[in-house]
Length: 334
Image (tube, rainbow, N blue to C red; front, top):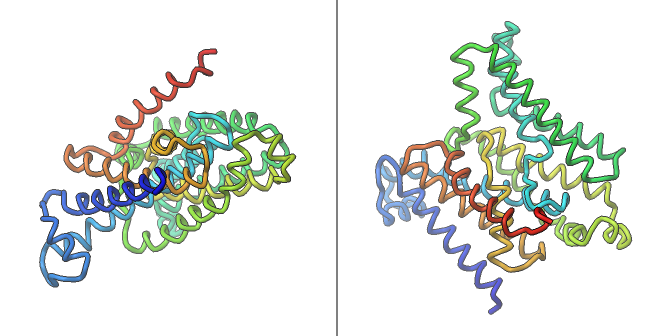
């Protein structure tokens, strides 16, 4: 048995155990046995079964999806931009989603259109997704004319900064109640997703993850540089488009429904490389998905125990990893 296979097995087992822990821990502690019986369809009518299936399972599934999605998209962006500090939000996807939510929560009351039927039906998630998709469409339009990927990186960062400035203006002008709602959204939450929303999120995220798997070969070529990839017959422009689309399907959707969950997309790809000691995306892509799912389950467990927003936990766990990467990468200091 190879080392990579053994690590995949251990990651699979740890993810399963963490899922059971996550279903067991909460304001009411449920024994492992009751959790397993609830998942397997036994113990009908019990309170434990209702808590596990109707409340906690939804949040745990979102943790699995969000962890896998953000980690896969972060790995793609780091390879595409050849930047170890790139993440799933580097294209301005998070900023676009924040602008959508800010316009929905803060801008609509200022314009006096919050009672409009379309505005009411849009919802926070819909506004965030439209904002993220709009920014991606703009980046895609720019990428068709600009060949230098670093220029696109800088433009994405500048676009994000500009959008953040607009959001701050809206915050300054908004009412206290609207501002509080927006700030709560920015903290991130895995528990606000409904069952009907999950059935919308699931196919979108699975499609994005499937696209990530389909792009493994182009990612391995890009690892050696765009010039080498181009001489090997890779269509760089088309590959960028598919990678950007995968990013908005994964990071954009998770941000829309869970808020901006930070540092998972930056930290997990590096942890995966250290764990597998490989740069092959045939190993890294599924490995990052599993590792991301496990890490976000851990963050969710800690946030339950400490009663804190999940975004604060991901930052506290992710920041040391990013600092370690900066220190270990001597190119930053050469």
